[in-house]
Image 1 (cartoon, rainbow, N blue to C red):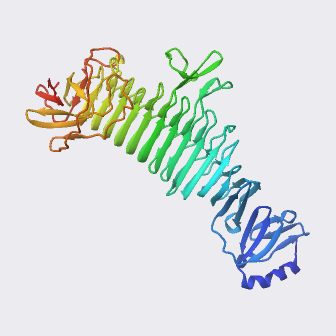
Image 2 (image 1 turned 135 degrees about the horizontal axis):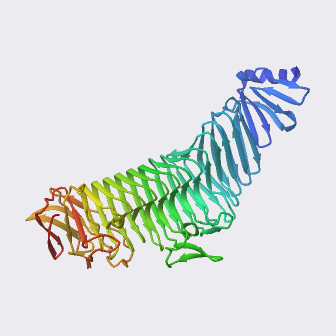
Image 3 (image 1 turned 60 degrees about the vertical axis):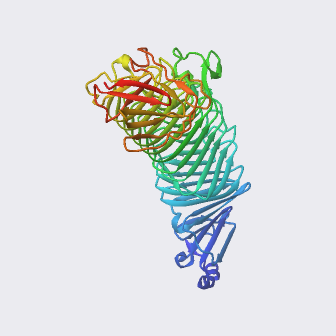
Length: 555
């Protein structure tokens, strides 16, 4: 090792008036503060050691000194088919940067921050880390025709911060999600991010690890059809946001749209927790089923004898683990065959939040017990149950309006065939449908009423004790008990207990709430079920809706 004294002496006077030494390798510029550059050590004219880094001189295209300010983070700027990267040396020890056209790759074994901006239609930003890193997307427009636009991998947690207006897209040939996480990650910020995936069975945002969303305005759209994976012998579908492990949504605004067969808004293989944020989901694709050697993208037949691996249904939210909702606003619409609104393959627990679901199939479904202790819930199932629990349904609080279709389906459905039941211990509850489940256990302590009163869509159902109005429920303006109503969008929900008053909306055509006894959907619940904390068992009450009136005794 020896000093290249001549070059160092030439640069030294510049350090007296300049701030920064710049060393450029291809499209990457390393910036070193003059007061920390110290001596530059050359080894046989082949390498240069400065600022704690060693540069191969055969790759250095330029060295110069200026008074440019050194950024506090790595800057990646895309432009057309290329990208420029600026690296502050003081924060880049342990990191390597490669640029190939508009393909930028960073590998780091140390914590760092990166800011990515610019525009490219043939680009990718990839980062692999073993330590916590921060990546800010700032007014980035990036498309990758055949791969992920942004790929964040490794074992270190990635904080993805959204700033300004951003857009990511992948092409029809892509076999990777548009925004890909293979490391624990959190999405936050105050900007907007639009993510689009068009390939068959592809995801707009996909995490192979735990994913948290705490901020930002995220619009994710998937339009690809379902795909039969011949290797794994499984039918796969698109999803706007998917996680192989747990997902937490605590803030932000999510607008998710899936149009292909079997498409999902949110899909998690682990558990889903929602404690904040505004979530709007729309799916319009049908059910995809693989049979023989072909994939039917709009299957309408019976699927009872078809393996779950060979079919996929559209879902607003589909979770293999448990769902816990303790806040936020959730609005889900599914219009394709088999489309359920919110589905948990384990337990489902709602303690707060505002939830509105309009589904082709079950509006909210749990494969095990369902617990509702709070929140404001309005659900409509066009062809199935409003709330469907395959275990017990425990309701201890909240305001619930559950509308199902005709018998044997219902507004409230517990798995009575297997000995389960609805259990009311609190809450303001309205169930409308063919066969509502009713309590069959002494654990249910809050009385309920059943009736086959005619309901008028868009009007108000009142429950009266003499002349006193105990509660009111607004019937959704497009609800149809026949299960064939138009858009079946609910009117803004209005329910009240005694002491609150909101005038009923204008009259609408009457809709009959079917009665029905027994059947697989429920037992002897009648067309309308109401449970309130103010009801007294054995006392008679009056239910009115427009010109219809019916007396019922609390049980």
